[in-house]
Length: 446
Ligand SMILES: [Zn+2]
Picture 1: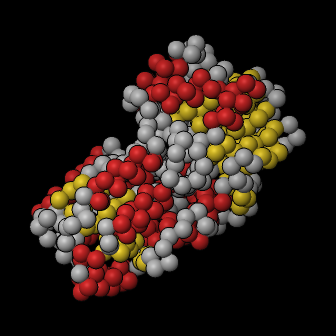
Picture 2: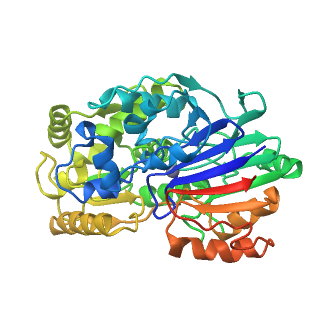
Picture 3: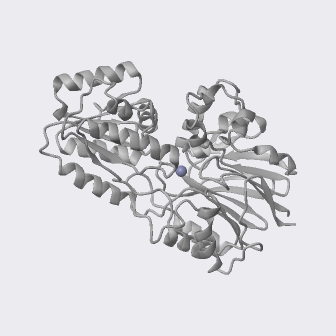
C-alpha cells in the first residue's frame, strides 16, 4: 500500500498545525490549527469574518492547497486536543472536505463552539465523538485509534493510523504525566505495544526538544501553587491569579487553594467562562456549586464592584490575561479600567509562562509594568509545560522504535536538538529522518 504524508502547517513554526496521511486511497487529516500570533500582531483583526485565503496569506492558518496533490479521499479530520493551534482553522477549512470531524468529547465541544462563532463559512461536517482507547475503521484496510496522553488541556490524545505497512503515530502535544491532576496518566503501555507491532512513522512535537531532562508532572505545578498561595494566607489585601483558560486542571487547583486560604474564588473573562463552563457541563471537573463564572463585560464589572464593597481580602479573582493580551481582564486591571483597585502590596499570581514569541513578550512586559506601577507584587512562572523535553522524547523513541520520524511543531532551529537525539536511534537525515517544511509531500512507501 502506498503511504504518503503531507506536512501542511506547523513545520516552520509553533502554531497552525495540519498534517495529512494517505494510506492507499484513504486520507486522514490531523489537526487544523491557527497561528494566533500572526493574528494578534495586527490590531483589531476579527478572524470570524475573514476568508480562508486571506488568513492563509497572513500565515494564520495552514495553506492546504497541497492537499490537491494527494490522490485519495479524506475520510476523517482528527483534531488531537482543543488548543487553538490545533483546532483554530477548522471553521475556515473543514467545509472543503467531505469528511467527519472525529475527536474526544471535550475537543468536539470546543470545535462545536468555534463553528458556531464563525461568520464567513458554514461548516457542516459531522462531529463524531471518540474516547481515548477507541478505534474506528478508515476505509477497508486502515484503522484509526486514539491513545490517551497528558497535556495542558484535558481529553488530549495521540491518534494512530494502523495501516498494512505499519502504524503512523501522530505524536503532537503531550508530556509524560504519570500523576496528572485531572484525567488518566499517559498510556505508555499502549505506546510500547504499538512499538512492538511496528511503527512505520512517528510525527513528533519538538516544542521543548531543546530542553534537558524531563517535563515535571502537573502535580508538581499544583504543589508549587499550593506553597505560594498558602504563604499568602495572612495577607489581608487583594490577591489576583491568572492562567491559561483552557488549563482546567490548573484552574481547579487555583479554586481549591483559594478556599484553603479563606477566599471565595471567582472566574472572570470570556474564555475563563467558556472553557471552565464547558468542562463542568461535560463532567470533567467538579467545581464548588457557588463558583461564579462571568464572561460579559457588564457582569464582570458588577462582580468587581461587589468585591470592592465586600472587601478584596475575601476573594480570589481568577482572570484572563496571562500573556498580557491587551483586551484581557488582567491587562484592563493594570490599566485601571475595572472597578477593582490594586494597592501597594497586592499580589498577582501568573500560573503560566510567557510564550516565547515577540508579540507575547512585549504585551506581557507592558501588562506586568502597569500592574507593578500600581504596587502589585508579581509571582511569576508557577507553571509546568505541557510538552515533552529531551528525556521524554528519548523514552518515546525507545518505546515506539519508529522506522521513520518527522519532527514537527517547531522551526528549523527547534528541530535541531531533536534531530541529534533521533540520530542516536539510528535514524538518518534525508533517509528515515525527514526534516521538512510546510507544504511538502513525503512518500514513505511507494
Ligand atoms: Zn497543545
